[in-house]
Image (cartoon, rainbow, N blue to C red; front, side, top):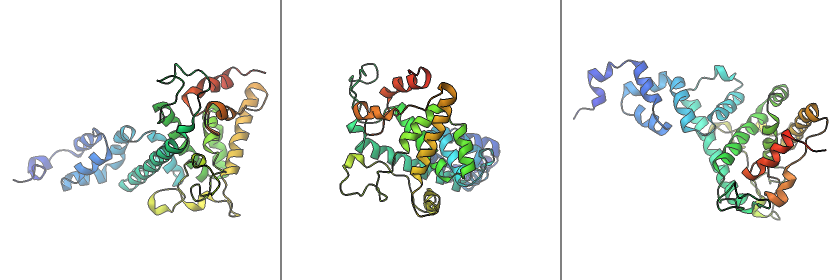
Length: 285
């Protein structure tokens, strides 16, 4: 039987309508499968990849806007001018997989050690016990911060300063925790004396071919890793914002993590939001 997509009537469907059909799909696997059915669909996808991506991406990729912003920063392209070609879409999907893998490692090595010392009866079920995986809200915080750290690492110093100034104080608290990787071995936590649960997820430092971060962006000119310097820059911007509001430096909430979190992570957790909200809005002293 002849392929239905090869019939003359099918070929006469306007490209705008075919683009709309693509845009209703749920995943990019569906997009690829539909594009593979015939030349007409393949040409539609190749010629209209940006509008199709903008419709499918937010449904298919968690925190998609942050992933797209990172790609724009990596390619030094204003976000409004970023063309989502097929290759660009593949890079975003690869980066999204890296984030998923990082969440998986975080859930394996960090989440089991979360302490819930304060009452969390209204936060988790069962009460006072963090679930074995990140909650939906925690996954969003983690994912947004992960992408933003990537962006911070590839921005020029002046662009980084501009970006920090428009980043909320609350988000900077999440980023400060995400930046605490100086105790993590260069080769993904290979220090022999380090407890396994202290081996944090690593940022991809591979080459450009696999769609991840350019290694040259991740290393300072003297050969040292610049993540510690970035963390200090985040802390300075937090202090600047907090000084403008309350005339004192920003309190460090991750110290709560030793009793009510895990290691240097506290603002990330759902049960840390009450303390973080109090620090942001009702400081004492």
